[in-house]
Each structure stands twice: as C-alpha cells, then as structure tokens.
Image 1 (cartoon, rainbow, N blue to C red):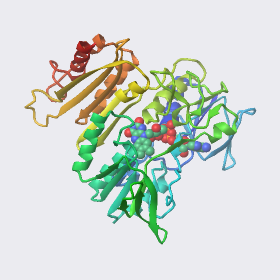
Image 2: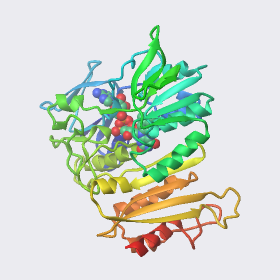
Image 3: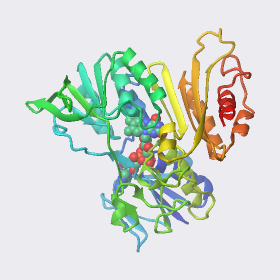
Image 4: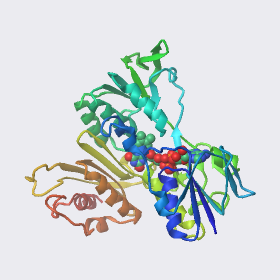
Length: 442
Ligand SMILES: Cc1cc2nc3c(=O)[nH]c(=O)nc-3n(C[C@H](O)[C@H](O)[C@H](O)COP(=O)(O)OP(=O)(O)OC[C@H]3O[C@@H](n4cnc5c(N)ncnc54)[C@H](O)[C@@H]3O)c2cc1C
C-alpha cells in the first residue's frame, strides 16, 4: 500500500489529507498534528467575545470517518534517504509521498517590553490562547499594535466586550495593506464610531511596564497610552525549519520553494500553505499573501497531484473579507495601490447599489463597489466592496471571474441570479453596473 504522510493540521494540511484520501483510494493517508487541540485560526479574534469560549473554536474534522489516520506529535526530522519522518516522541513514519503544511506562527518582533506580563501575541495555540483569555478577564484598557485585519478584528471584539481599545498602526490607515484608502477609511470610521481610538501613522517605540507587568505603550510621537493588556498583532514567520533541515530548497523569508504542482525540490515531497513560497497570479512575482483560503487552494492541488500531475497552481489572487461592527469589507485581487506599484494600467468602475430590492425592503443596506480592469487586456484584476455581510460572497464571485480571466464585457453580461430579499436588483446588479461604468472610461 502507498503511504502518504501529511505534516500539519491547519487548513493546508487538513485539506491536503482529505484531497489525497479522495484521489488515491488505495493509499494509507496519515496526518501528523503537533497539538492535541487545534484552534480554528481565522476565528481566534471571536473567542474574546462573540464565541466567548476557546472550546467553541476547535478544529475537529472527523478524520476517523474519512479513513485518515491521525498521529499526535511533533515531527523533528525528515530522513529523505530512508523516506521516513522522525517524531519527538520516538515514533517514525515511512512515506512514499510526504506533504509539508507546517504553516506560520507569530514572529517575535523586537519591541522593548514585549516580554512583560499581559503582553500577548496572536498565536494559533490552545494553551497560549487560554492564558490570554484568562488574562483579559476584568481588564479595562487594551492597546493593539497593528491595524491589519487581525488587529482590527481583535479591536472590534474587545470593544464589544466593554474594554477601552486603542489600535496603533504604522501606516496612514488601518487595513491599508489590502484596501485602498476610500475603503480603509470606511472601516476606520466604523471603528471610531464604536469608540475605538486609532493612532495611525504612529509607531510603538516601547512597551512600558512596572514590576514586570505591562502599563502601556510609548509612541514615536512621545504620546503614552495606558493599558493593562497589550496585543502584538504584527509579524508572521513561515515555519520552514523541517524543510531546511531536510535540505530542501527554502527561501528564508518567502518559504519552501515549490513548482506549479506544489512539488518541492524533492519530487516525493510536496508543500502547501503559509510555509510555501508563493507567486502572484497577476505578476508571477513572489507574494507574501497568507490566507487560509490560499492554503486550502494549494492543498486541493497538491493532494490531487501526489502520484499523478492533475492540477496546476497559477499563482495566488488573494480574496479576503472582514467585519467591523455591522460593516463588512471584502476584496479580491489587486487594489488600485497594488496595481500602481506594479505599473499595471487599469480602469476603475464604481457602483453603489442596495443589497435587496426594492430599496424599501426592510434591512436594506447599500453596497459600495469598486472593480478594477486591466486597461490593456480588459481583464478583471480586482474588486473591493463595503456594505452588509453579503459582500464576502460577492468578492468570491469576482475571485472566480479573475481566475477565469473574464473581460469587461464578460463581467457585464455574467448570468447572475437575483431575489428581492437576498440580492441587489437585476436592473442594477453591482458587479454589472461597475463593469459598465468601467467600460465607458476605457
Ligand atoms: C487571528 C487570525 C485571523 C485570520 N483570519 C483569516 C481569515 O479570515 N481568512 C483567511 O483566509 N485567513 C485568515 N488568517 C490566516 C490563516 O489563519 C492562515 O493563513 C492559515 O492558518 C494557514 O494555514 P496553514 O495550514 O498553511 O498553516 P497553519 O494554520 O499555521 O497550520 C500549520 C500546522 O502545522 C503544525 N506543525 C508545524 N510544524 C510541525 C511539526 N514539526 N510537526 C507537526 N506539526 C507541525 C502546526 O502545529 C499547525 O497545526 C488568520 C490568521 C490569524 C492568526
């Protein structure tokens, strides 16, 4: 029987094991997971209020029912010449094909005071997060370093919990790494409306403490913000130690090198997820995008390719949503900022359309839409949406359009469906409207 070993139980490893199981029915598929209890990484912010309990955020696929063996333990070494992996607990597993999905972890960034009590990182680790949850009990003031989506989601949750929240962001706007200013500002406005204080364009010089416990932070402007908890929500490092130890081709910052079939420099070892070296769908240049959806995409490719080349990775598009209060923001592909940085000539189409019809329908919210098309090829290259929580799935529609390289006319004439309670009206469907708007600007 052919042996497949998958290392890692994040979205990458899990989907890779399930895909291998479906594609190679005769194979013996074993998933090695380091931790007894795996948390769902994307919903970590929500354990602090919405879920209110870490045990409601456990990742527990029924691997036994799927015919996937699970081994709990840390892989310490890959012996490529013997085709074996060695675990810290002394176990060893032989493989015909090995799949690395070792992911990423929060990076220790060099801020003075980061080792003080009640300073936390955002770790995908059950025991660490349990300590974090206990530590915030009864606390009043929290400073979050980093206004990316993780910092913003944490801020929103701590605010709903009744805490005084400050977010410090180095860039001029929160969420600026993914959204253009006009959309990022909508998110910031919501954060401010809920009482969160934003310190954008500012850097935390040091974290201040007394008797070993955190008291606040000092900014580069000299301002001091009081805090009884500080969260460092910046910095992610790819987990590539195992791959490096095995002598695979690895770039220290960008990750384990793979080809379009997700094969590493050893044809019997595949890699997927945050730990891998990714390239952009648009430019084929290295990409630092790290999303669970991308890990799952790569895993569906690698899992199918283990013994036969069936699927190819064309590079990462990046599709992502977040929620701030009752406002949802979503995007896919390139923002205007990213297109400019790549010197891609583009044309923008905009629309602002109700998410139900007629607009008098109870609960109606307007969806602000921006689509980007490559001005030379007319292919759709990006989208941003703001409005009700339906925008997450609308960005997903655009992701498929991007992946299929649809042009303005294809987008304007896409055969979408509508319903008064559920969608924008057929006459003014946001994606079609924005495409028509872009067409007039070509
Ligand atoms: C707070 C937060 C919110 C996020 N929100 C979103 C979101 O809304 N949408 C989205 O798409 N992405 C989101 N992300 C990003 C997403 O979580 C990551 O991109 C995703 O977890 C990567 O999946 P992965 O399987 O590649 O790696 P990981 O999730 O990092 O999993 C790697 C696994 O490998 C295991 N492992 C590593 N080394 C070994 C070893 N030697 N032996 C055994 N096991 C090992 C680890 O223990 C871990 O279980 C968020 C991340 C965070 C932290």
